[in-house]
Amino acid sequence: MIYRNPIIKGFYPDPSVCYAEGKYYLVTSSFQYFQGVPLFESDDLVNWKQTGHVLTRKSQLPLDYALSSGGIFAPTIRYNNGIFYMVTTNTTTAKNFYVTTKDIHGEWSEPIFVEQDGIDPSLYFEDGHAYFMSNGTDDEGNSGITQCEIDISTGKKLSPSKTIWKGSGGRYLESPHLYKIDGYYYIMAAEGGTEYGHMITYARSQNIWGEYQGYSGNPVLTNRNLGGYQIQGVGHGDLIQKQSTGEWFIVHLGFRQINRWQPFHHLGRETFLTPVKFENGWFTAGHNGTTVEEFEIQGDFVQTEKKNYSFADKNEWIYLRNPDFSNYEISDEKFVLYGTENSLDTQTPTFTGIRHRDFESTVSCEVSLTGENSEAGITVYMDENHHYDLAIKENDGKYTAVLKLNIGDAKYIRNSIELNQNSTVLEITSNNFVYSFKVKDGENIYDFGSAQTRYVSTEVACGFTGVIYGLYAVGKGCKAEFTGFANNYI
Ligand code: 6LW
Image (cartoon, rainbow, N blue to C red; front, side, top):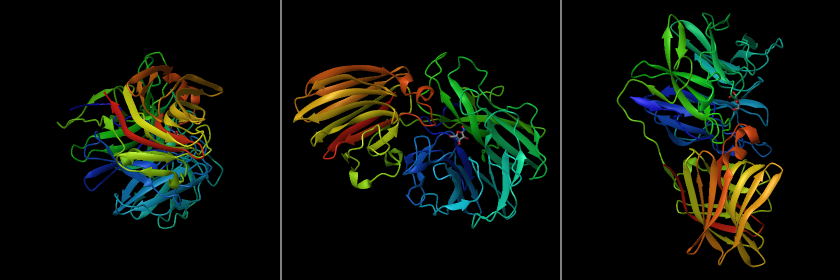
């Protein structure tokens, strides 16, 4: 069959994957969003369904002081002896930790901390031993891919940390994962930074502590030389073998720029799948070491894609930092949001959203508003400094619909119109280049114009996240009822 990349669209970066009892499980980063670490499952490595999140409680996920693109960085998921492990870094508390569960559909444990610095932690199990690695500094002060043995029940170090590989020379050596395949240990990592120069490299050794010998063809996977190609920034991946066919793959991140020669991406870093071939103890990946849109693999299953999202898709809705849930009444039909004085320009607005997953989309919702000096609507949200807000506002008993563009220091009310009542239908459509905004007031439909996608892209906003379609409410007495939410893709 032929499958198309990305296999998981929208802001789902730094994927890690494992196999357990007939299924594949995948996790991704989540930064300042709650709940943390989206969890997916699949039967075939191509079709993935989000089943929830790994970090579901504040005790596992303290985010109160997390800046945008702070909080939870790249996770790793592993399965050993009937137990699932998810290890990650809370960069805001600067702690590496893991949580465990025996029931992948149940709750995960409280965090177990490992006293080792660095980001992108990973675990490797062999013969009753557990090894922890990160892109940290070892006990001798050497930085690189650093490894130590740990007591998996407590997280305590059982050996000194040792830097086992220093990469192939690219900047930002990160994302280490260790595998043992046919007698060799392989350490796979990312280098080049998570932008256009991103890449995957690896080395092998017959001894777990090294020396590791770098692959002479490094980087094994990169799109850095594919000028004008939509898929860019491929790197940060995890190796997995498909049980039914024996085929190998790297599940990894990448992003789609808005067009050829237009290096902007606003949908976030997404999850891709690239085939891998082993030969004489070394492996190659993709199409001449690049990730392309389509690959042919074994099997005659089909790739399907969920195109419609609503309030009922509870696994996909996320919040900012540690939300005060007394400000939210959530059901499958209706979301009621209570505002506070915190606007979308602050870190803790009343906000819940769902990822913007593909260029061509529509999102619409009816909003009805009560409360003096209040505001509620839909936001195209990259971070607190970069967002487009289509909203209804109350002032002196009058209701207006507004479109506000916030691009860093450039803040601008693009359009506004007085409404006949305290409710309206707000609608946003998107393509690669623009978001277009419409307001419905009874029979009247007002075209509020459009705003470019590039100004809410990573290249403008910086950071590691992607656009979220958010619902929000602002104002102390604000009560906003949202009904009929629909987010559709073509
Ligand atoms: C992540 C690092 C990276 O921890 O970006 O692309 C960082 N790679 O490995 C944030 O996602």
